[in-house]
Image (cartoon, rainbow, N blue to C red; front, side, top):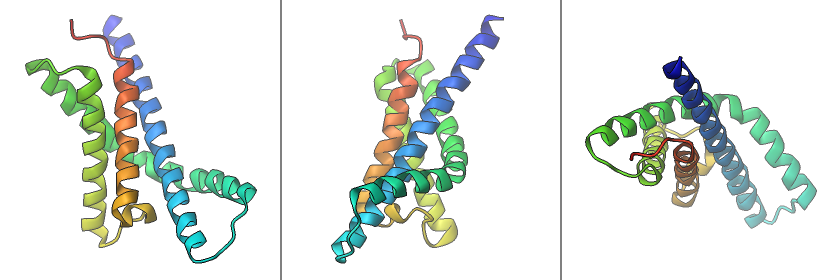
Amino acid sequence: MMLRNRLINTMADWLFATAAATLFACWANSWRVMARLIDLGIEIPPPLRFQTLMRDAAGMAPAVALVFGVALALGFGIAALIQRGWRVPHAIAYPLAGAVAIAVTLVLMKAAMAITPLAAARDPAGVAMIVAGGAIAGLIFAWFRPSLA
């Protein structure tokens, strides 16, 4: 029963972390695209910016969550295995695993498709923002993990 509860809690933590990384990536993507449009002289009023962020997230989130969810599950699983041998604090292991998982995912998407489906990931600043979302997802996941003591 205790193992079942721990599995359910871990899955809930992973879902929450995946949701955070997904929203972060979707919003970073929208923000970067709108910033480029504004640089071109296109006026985007604040209410439209907010509406665009929400609509882009709603449209992109299912696909991004699927891809990032798998990546984070693998990354967090590897981090948990590494922690069994080395006593790395959760606050370091899981954010690092989240960032690496998302970075590897972006590289694999670029290699497989010759272009990344996330427009923000087409320049270094956008990649950094999306990878930071993976690190934030790792922080969220680490927050709920039992201590190593």
